[in-house]
Image (cartoon, rainbow, N blue to C red; front, side, top):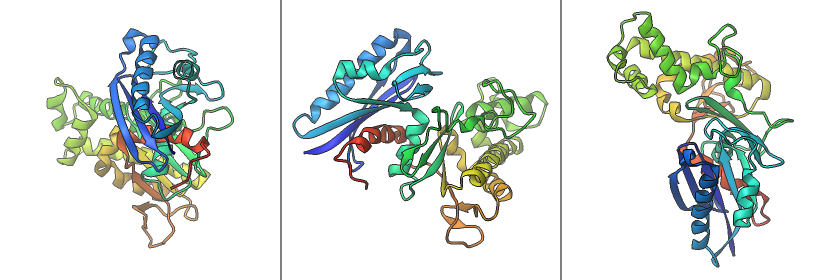
Length: 335
């Protein structure tokens, strides 16, 4: 009997659930609103109801080897407790793993959402041909995940991958983490909007001004940049250079073969990637990396560090979450 796993993306707005085969094939997918205001008992109840419906579709025809759940926040991997989450207010020291296991009677693995997104990209996405990668997720904030030799690298106390809090500007903008000059303050959607508002406050001439009252967004700034607006172009150049500085440091420290850029802001790839590649070229030790686009070394070298956008989009976290129990299953066969 073939094996499959269920991957769950537990977000603050949407709850998505997928059945994934051991070969990486997406068998089925469903989704619903998280409705966090109704409390965690309601959310987990709805999660389990939808998961059980998905499981019943394959009863007798495939063996469920486990459930993987990706969620934003600080997680105690050993206990399966969600210590806290920015997207799920009030979920403090909550035994998410144990609660789902008790309701469904199936083994559950709880993991940080950025980590499972990185694992998904390494398995089936932009990093499919690589055993190790580093992923940056550029969204409301900046997250990240490290996969080393096919496994998530969590560090000695589970905090590895907090790439958004790498410093790229020693005396820069204050960060909610308590530091200042973090990458998150220069490469997130929130940062893009903030930098646009700062330019407007300085009285700079820009097409963005007409959007100030309607509501600025990172997408509006991106579209303005692609239309040639000087201020918008400069903002995304700052995004690229900040990200390039962070990646350049990672190249020198860890020397991974590929760096994958995901999250909503990665959709502005054309606006920030030229500055990104230029900065990585400047910051990387020449023997550690030859910065490359789509695997083509700038100096013609065959072996070179690859930097590219994610391929799986929002499904990366679902695939990565499902892969966790598949990796523990005796039936798992690498593709």
